[in-house]
Image (cartoon, rainbow, N blue to C red; front, side, top):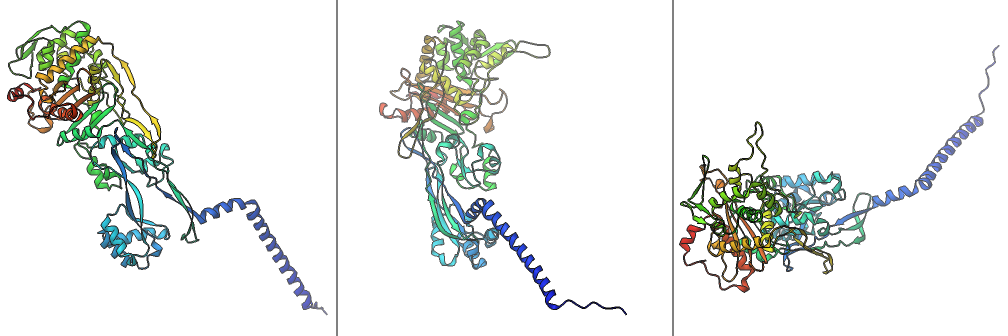
Length: 618
């Protein structure tokens, strides 16, 4: 018979279960203790930092940018307070009602507001920007309906302001938010999305001084991101003030005289290189860029056929026309091919082989010496003079006076212009011909320059042959007036030219204004030396009826002739004759500059104005 084992006593089975449970609990406690030891001892410092960063948040406080001032302390660029409208999505208790009220206040569609609120649901306790730079009327409307707009608040911040709008805009530049393309570049690694940055002109070139240092607020938030209290605040430090060499009074006079025209006006002190005036037209209003431009607005400006963002003073190049005759005269006097007494006959045209080159004056000027040729801007004289002087010496002299090289202002890309590169005839190539020299001698064909290059040239003629680097920044100061940086003139080189040569050219330029093609620039009591120029845009025989095919009008000048304080270059694109169009603009600037030294201005520059209208065509 098989015996069946008896079952364990109940007390023994219970004891086994208890021991097993105790072991499991002990193991769990050991694991928990080990985990606590790891978190508190080994990783304690790291998790303390993470916890602090999750509890404390920093909100940037934008620093006001420094002012931009003219040479006399007149404000050119400043800041103004602006109000931005924010909303905290979690605090909006009734989305459709709030959206409807905001849409009415902001003149927007309710759907647009609801869409913005939906975007903020991922971070419901973070302020969401609804609208920048709201108007005073909108601000008042928001305050009046505060109880209908839970979660909506206003914040004040400084914004860039240009009191004169488009005046000197291409020089001053503009400020806008750093864009995505810039954020990925190494030089912008310290910028955050939405931060303002100088994007052109002075604003860009000296942004490091002007921008200042942002402050910040450290706030404590709860687990849901709600602000509990302000922990600390670091006040922002305003940027430094930038003092320019520009004279606002002269700038305003130039802008007024140039109204409605296209081109550039530049003026400097010829004995230092300080820029006093810089006008480029068409222009733009930099206030538009202070806030985020819409895609349509940017496209409208960027695609404008007038290229308002281009600084024509040094980023555009044109044939100098008769202005280049000054270079031919200097080259001839220096190499001995010409003397003040050298004469040529002008019947109104010049024949070279089978080619005919006309003068601007029908019937010609008859027999002229060099002084008379400059005063009357005689093309036929300089056709023959150019051939006698030689293209190599003409180009050499032009380069010595700053043509064919960038002026070095440092405010963006600068054009080099172009000078002839006479090459001998080679197989399969036409080479340089005498006809090319004839054309180049009156500043046409391969000769192109910028207004800034011609300003450097005429300043050197005025000051005795010194080439100064044009400059526009005088000093940088703190908001309290402490000078941080001071700048001085920079002499690039001294042109190796006989002083008597330049003295002769200055006398001839005085004759241009006193009784020649530049008579419309005459200011009683102020001896002005000048030279007119009319540069062809299309070849002879082609139609000029179209506005953008008309000749460019030039006038270069300096005054007083015996002690130059001001040199001016005026270019009017497609303006016609330099003597008729460009010279009066320079006159307006001289009147403003020497207002205390001149008699009361009169409308006519001569009693024989009708005769002058005939004579000052070039």
